[in-house]
Image 1 (tube, rainbow, N blue to C red):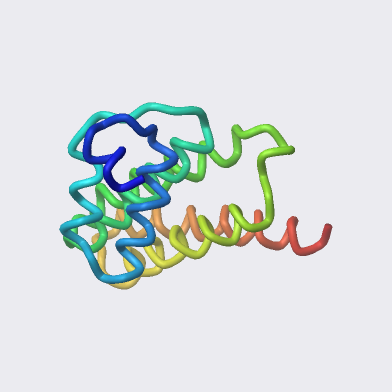
Image 2: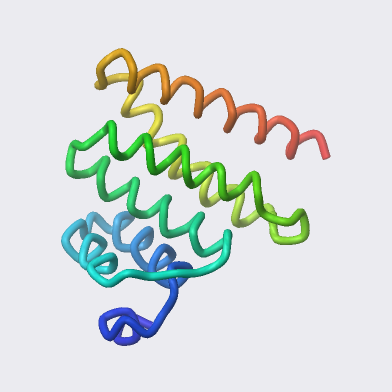
Length: 133
């Protein structure tokens, strides 16, 4: 999969999944390199790609851009068909987006902090709905 990503032959889903795993291993340069080629895909692919790119931007200290990407990522989740919204995907993405938003709440200026608080509310609401099912 890494070779396919390097050649630009995989979509945003593969890129997002790989980049998130690289971020979890503190391999920021490798995660960043995944997105040097334009990638495309469906809502699930865009969800992972935006989440991973937001994680990269957070690690680089670009919290305003990280929050914009995190909000876009959650928008893709909300647009996905119900059958694609698995618990594993939700937990994975919510944990990353929560970490990004919590960092922005603690360290960002007022408009970014407000965006982060709004996203945390949306994530909390989504989590509580899923937990009640």
